[in-house]
Length: 231
Image (cartoon, rainbow, N blue to C red; front, side):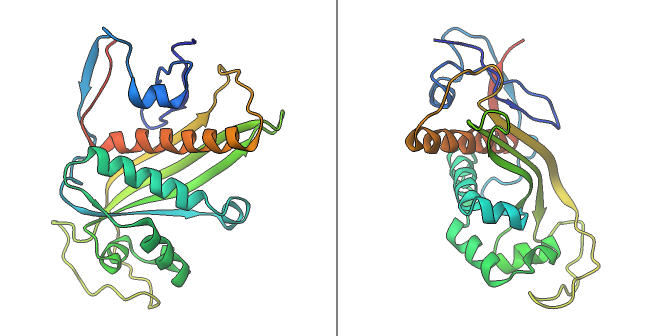
């Protein structure tokens, strides 16, 4: 069984995640080998505890056309990880978010504060998906690449007055949105050091789920205390 397989890089703060040869499920259940020294990492933003949160993904039309389940599956994975690790968080169901996006095609033009208020949440975790591909251009084999800019926006920032923001479909407010947290995340799965060959639809579906889960875990870690291997 192979060990120490790097699968992802967090571009805002470079991070290598050692994985066993068993893949992402080894990462999920046994992140560190027995006896490994660990250190605690605090959340970059801990304001989501006990809050109502909507995970909202913006993807280019080409992504939705080529991968119609991409936003649904990735939103589900992120919501699951947040609910598993962030204390008392309440994540808006994915179906509710996607219905809102379908019913309001101009939703991404709204000020983020208004988006949060319209969805009835305290915070919006907004991801601008820059890249989503599932095959290696050279070999044609499965290789997921997911890159996104992530921002957390509050419905009512304590240092900003609530001043007449328009409803959905109205003119866009000039009120400046202030991100409570921002980051950039990129996942490549499997990476260049993993020589597994994925054949058959079942393997590819499983690997796609692994890639979504890895992305979701790395993103959710930004909002809760966690442990990593000590140097």
